Image (cartoon, rainbow, N blue to C red; front, side, top):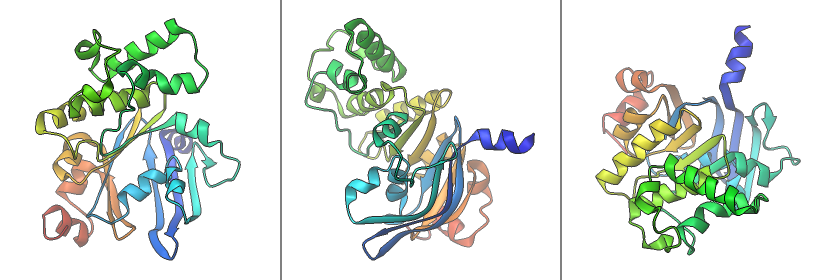
Length: 258
């Protein structure tokens, strides 16, 4: 009975995951899982494989070219490295928000409606509802509801990032990948995105790469520390910061390197 409960809790499970860019062995023998409706933070110094790893979860990493992987990435027990995986369907279920806000050069409305349209929703009333709900979910609706046809690029940096999160949510994903989503934002916008992440985890599983250890401590349920492509340790965030098991983790979180 317990084993079933554990399995249902896991959204992703990595088994001996390795990744190479050409000859560069960028991810090494990763074995860990990511739990449903939790925020998992990935921390570590620059170049340790954080962003590489998060992009394996919806196979966006293939766009980098010359990538080879071995092992397994199980998403609800289906191995994503199986050639039969439908990338369009996977990226609908596993959405992505990047470090730098990247709205399309279209209206606010068209940015959010873009994904649902690609997936076959044509009815205006249905699109209107999705746009409104997605913007409400990111606490942006009240700020933009009277100018939905205005260019998205006219929004502030923090608003643009929330719009990009709304765009990711519009396809009704299960998982939201966030690659340093606040690194280009001011402190007030950063707090808004963190509060938003905490609200969203009621309905979504979130994996967040962050270089900001205070951010990981504030928002995540579990934290994984990466170093030179290896997972050094992963545990409940409070425990990892209060009582790391590995000296390298302790050295990193206390600022001795990185």
